[in-house]
Length: 456
Image (cartoon, rainbow, N blue to C red; front, side, top):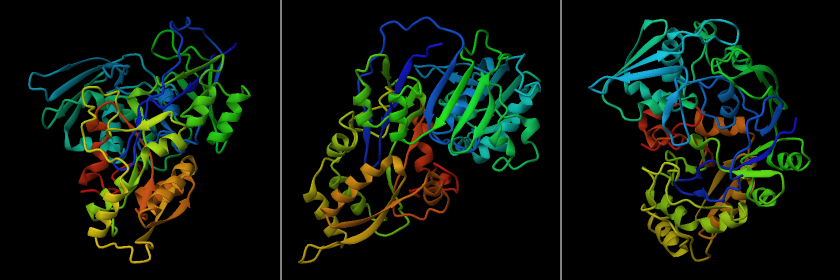
C-alpha cells in the first residue's frame, strides 16, 4: 500500500545556555487528516540507536524505536496531559503524596509472560532510579513502591510533587520485564539488543550500522492498534537521508537540516510537520566544562555568549528555518516558557571587555587570548565551523574535534574530558523533568546526557 511521506521537523526548540536556536517553521499539514488505513510498512530514517533499553538512556536516537516497543504507566497527549497506558486509572491521596495505579489486567510481554505490578516495582527500584539519566533524580522524591496485588502498584512520595505523573511516560518511565533483567547488569544484558516489551510493535531484527525492524504485535492490549504491519528504522546521516527521501526510499525523515526543510517544504506529496514528539523536544546546547580554566570564570562564559552571532548561525547553518531561542525551555510548554530572560545579542565590545577583565588579554599584536577545543559529532559540522570563526574574532582559538557519537558521548558525560562540547538533549513536558538533570549537583555522574558541564 502507499504510505504518506512525512518530513518530521524538530518537535520543540533547539535551545541552549550559551547558544540556542528555536524551531519556528510553519508546519504544512492537511486541514483534515485522512482516515486511518491498516497494513503496510513505514520506513523511517534514523540514527543508530545503540542499546534498545529505555531504562538506561534518554537518547533521542533510541526513543523513537523503543517508544514503539515499550509502554509507561501513562502517556502524554499533545497537550502534555497524562492519559492511561499500562495504568488504566489512578487516584491520588488527599495529602498528594500517595499515587495508586490500577494496571491493565490483560497485558503480556512479547515473549508471552504476564505483565504485573512486580515489573513496575522492579523497573523503578533497580533500573530507572539508579541508571536513567533523568529519572534517577526521582530517587529524592519516591519514598516507597508497594504492590498490594498483581494489578495494583502504589507509589508513596516523600513530599508533594506536582510533575510526578509527567515522569511516568515511556520516555522517562518505560517498564521493563523483571523476568529478563532481575539478577543481571542492565547495562550489559544481551536483551538490550533484542528487547522484549509490551508495546504495539515487537522486535524482529537489529543489523548494526544498517537498520532495526519491528513487526506488529497482534496481541496488543489496545484494540485496533497498531495499524501498520512493520516499522523499519534505517540508520542514515543527514545527507544520505535527504537523498533517500528524495528517491522515495524512506517515508519519514526526522530532524532534517534547515536547507533540507526548505527543499521539501512545498514538495507535492510531502507533509512537513513539527508534530509527533512534542513531549520530547530536541534541545541542542553548547556546553562548557566548568571544572577547567578559563571556563570556571563566569566572565569568560558570558563573553562567549556575547561573541556568538546566533542570528547568523541560524541563517547560515539552518537556512533560517530555526530562530535564536529566547529561553532554554521549549515554547510548547506554554505555562513555563517566557522570553523575558537575559538575552545575549551579538556584541564583540562586551565580549572583549569581559575577556580583558578576566585577565585574558590579546596583547599589542591582537593575538590569541587562549586556545581551547570543541568536540562535536557529524550532525553539527557546519555549526562548529561557525562557532570557531566567531570566537576567533575575540581572540579565542578553537581546535575542532569531530567524533563518532559513542566517542563524543563518552568524552562529554563519562570521562568529562573536554573543554567545549556541542551536544543535544530531549526536553520532556515539564522543566523539572527535562532541565533539572542538566544543572543539579546530584546529577554529576558517569551517565549519558546528565550534568556534563559539572555546573553546581
